[in-house]
Length: 369
Length: 171
Image (cartoon, rainbow over all chains, first blue to last red):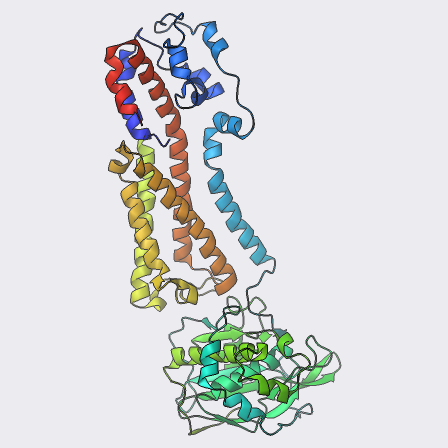
């Protein structure tokens, strides 16, 4: 085939009418189909042409048109090749399409893996169980001094060195044209989580750090994820009762449940408003997550969505609030790479969605109540 | 040269040009303006605005457009009629590279972006189809070339009248 098929065919055409009696230019069609033309006549693979047409086999006379092929020609035909080469000669079209079949199989395999639960780099999230009336937050405590300062004072050098880790994915763009605007006209960021949820616990560290680049938190309390769930007792903040102030952004948080067991579930803490529930229903599903209705759920101005944690809560296992906070300025720390890296991603998404640059703050906006 | 080969490959290449041109234009103007439903897993904007929509600073849509233009040139009637070897090799290489790129992009869509872009899928299907037709064309033309080569070789050996054919078929 590499021998310019079209040119070969074009040049070959005149041969047919002129071939009367001079040689045996073509094998009978039925023979060609049975054993493959290249076996019969391929000059590059065998000495077929010369042997069959007389150059090498001097004793064979020229054959007239319509005259049956002499039996000797069939005897001189090499035996069929075996194995892959034989298959290629017997079924050239099928063999040629094998690469296409491989491509199709690869794509089908990807789809099957995806359909059966394969996931990307973002860890899974806990399942949200919204609903119910307000309750107390029995699982929280006062935040130890210095923890929030450690989170919000990570040096730009460290943040720049960590960047956005390639092991995790960024919040997904929604492509929505309409922004999520708070009643005060500012771009809104909505967080939905629960205190029992270990993935929410992990994500809060990064949300607090990222939002602190655009404003200021106050009233944050300390809490931990459920002691009986996966990644038990992951130390974190609670947004319940906290306030966020910023000149440019509005932050709303909803902590659906505490970390206090109540029957088969946990005590209800807050509920979604109808507007928040509509956003939750609209975006907390594919393609933003493979587990619809999961938390944590982060909606950045309706332009970017993050469902699930940006890193695994495993990173924080066994560490106290103070121990976690103390590592955030160490660019080589696994904890810092996870938390600061996810914070970098969230901050970048906020800037991309709203145009607000890190560093602006001061005016007051109510947060989770 | 069978007409179906020229018509099919050129048609698929032109279709790829159209699809990738649309994706490229929207990439540089308004990626959210893609005519594409937003129904769960189908979300063109999520794909075309994702981190993976650019490779080494070059939009994937633009890479696809350049590829499609190249394939159009290589599947033109003039390219198919060329007796030179390189158009055939380039056709095979470029279409094969396109098929491999499809595998990568489907992986990115399914596992990194978690969304499918219908326009991109159209390009993917066109690319794989083009690769298949080119391979099928090579397989269907190979016997002709062999037979013609055989016949010409025989004529060259048996008389002067076959010399021109034998010469033109030489690699």
